[in-house]
Each structure stands twice: as structure tokens, then as C-alpha cells.
Amino acid sequence: MLVKIWVSLFLAFAVYSWLVYMHTEDRNNVPPPDRHIQAGWQLWQDKNCQSCHQLYGLGGYMGPDLTNVYSDKGAKYMQTFIKYGTGKMPDFHLNDSETQSLISFLAWIDKSGKSKIPASVVHWWGISSK
Ligand code: HEC
Image (cartoon, rainbow, N blue to C red):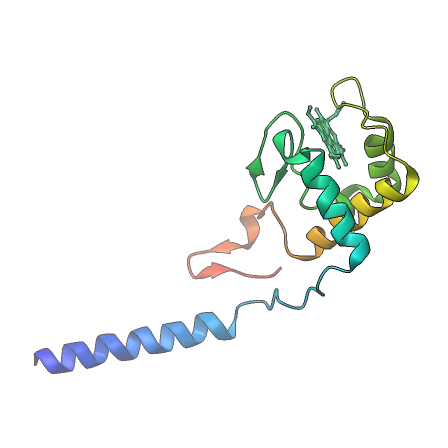
């Protein structure tokens, strides 16, 4: 009797695991960062952007989450903030190439997934892609 319960539990676990792995979206298709993206990543750290901004909700809370700013607002919009700052965000006096590198870095982050999960895609069995 006990053996049957254990076997059933193991089978349920195996089937559930298989279902989860088969229906998980492949996030590993993001290409490795090229030198331009790496330069932006380095600037992200040097200028401590994360002290005010979050990626996937982690970071400071003075500025907005920037995980998907590239697809939500676009490169031109980002360029204005990064190059000139605002009353609340400092002007880092970055040149065009540095600004571009930071945009490339954030565009690369954007490809890795969505930071805000809309309630409509959350189900009792997990998250569906649409
Ligand atoms: C001292 C805190 C602070 C730091 C450091 C900072 N930011 Fe910001 N950032 C802000 C604030 C606050 C806003 C919102 C500005 C506003 O609405 O006036 C903002 C806005 C932005 C936006 C526009 C986001 C949107 O959704 O509207 C981008 C892009 C951005 N920052 C990029 C960066 C990058 C890249 C760095 C690092 C080089 C950086 N920020 C460093 C505070 C900061």
C-alpha cells in the first residue's frame, strides 16, 4: 500500500516536472553581450545607475524600473534622459558613444524577459506567454 502511494507520488512529480519544463519559454536565446553591450554594462556599474533604478525589481527606488524601458519607450526617449538627465536624475556628462552603449546594454536586458507580469497571464498552473 505504502509503496503504491510512493510510486504514485513519484509519477505525479515526474509528469508535473515534464509539463513544467516542456511549457517553459526558452529565455536562453539571448545572445551573449558583445563589446558594445559590455561597455554599457560597465558604465551601468561605474555610474551606479542601479542605486536609483531597478532591473527586474531589484535596485534603488528613486527612478523607474528599466528592465523593459527599451521596448516600452524606445531608444530616442532613453537617449534624452541618459544624455542630459532631468531635474531628478543627474546629468552624467556622457558622450554619444557612452550613451549608445548604455542603450545597447538596456536593449539587451530587455530581450531577457518582462519585469512586469500582467495579472491576465498568471494562472494556477503558472504563467502563460500571452
Ligand atoms: C540619483 C538617482 C538616479 C541615478 C543615479 C540615475 N537615474 Fe535615471 N532616472 C532617475 C529618476 C528620478 C528618473 C525619472 C526622471 C523624471 O521623471 O524626471 C530617471 C529616469 C531615467 C530614464 C527614463 C525612464 C522612464 O521610464 O521614463 C532612463 C532611461 C534612465 N533614467 C537611465 C539611467 C541610466 C542609464 C543611469 C546611469 C548612467 C541612470 N539613469 C542613473 C534617477 C536616477
